[in-house]
Length: 250
Image (cartoon, rainbow, N blue to C red):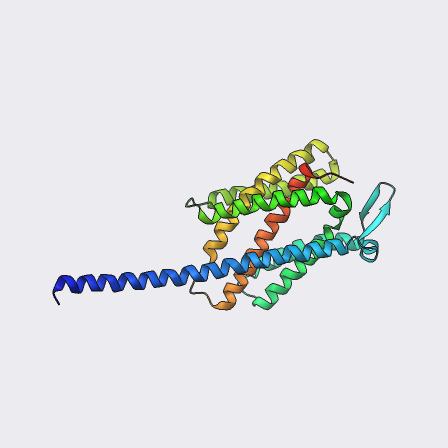
């Protein structure tokens, strides 16, 4: 065997090893992303079920009170509405420290409580407009996730800008809680759509980057749960923002 043939065989073997390594990484990434979207979908299903339960007489009387102006959240309802925010901050700060069982428990509790707080939406809007908005949101969300996954552009700058916009939205919503201004509410809705469109693409790319084939299986599962939570938040917030434009009140 001459020197050139030896080099060719060596190059072939090296290329084969690289190809096999890439295949393993690609398979691991695919499995990781499947976990993310599966958990996100199940989280949405849990929220839909608890939102429906919230409209039944037993839970309705616990979560809401009748006022001269209409229906409002009870003290328990306010607690249920605020609790998911606390869980999100807890989970985000401890994502690398907690085991997958605890992480998944937090995710299911979060999904259930969020669903109960959404019962007010089921009571306020027609079923037809809710379904229509869900279809629009699902199509938009899928396209944005595909873009975030496939784009070669670094979306870090976009994500930072959108997170700044998110904090601005929170401040504006707090202010409008006291002002009750219709023009400000409309502006908040428009900006919300823009912010969560950008965050969906950014979070998808970031979740993809979070994957590391050297991670232990427990950490991969925890990261998948955290990614599912991120995308869940993007989806429901985009849904709510679009509902203000496409929803028909009862």
